Length: 137
Image (cartoon, rainbow, N blue to C red; front, side):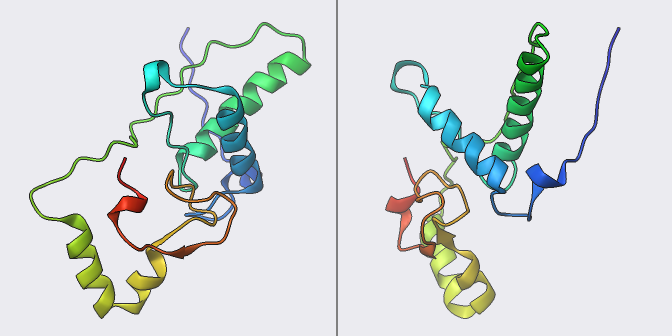
């Protein structure tokens, strides 16, 4: 038997591009309890997508525990990586040149706050990105 369930929980989803309270708590739970193998970077649980799907997985496992059911066998598969591919063009110089010409892009290019970027301070104050050292591993 094969099943697929599609869900949309507004309390998990929240606003696009930002953590919901539940996804931010899922990120904090992960950081408290999980370690990547052999010094490798851990999951990047961002406020856009990955922390929200991770929060749903935690909810399902908690439901199983509360109902005293055997836990489901779940695989968390995220194609997003903290290791970003870099091309021949310096991405920071290109971004910086574009944001100087576009106020909307300048306000978008922040780290911290609710973005969930590993270089930022989740839940802290968001600030304008200052350079590639803030997000490159």
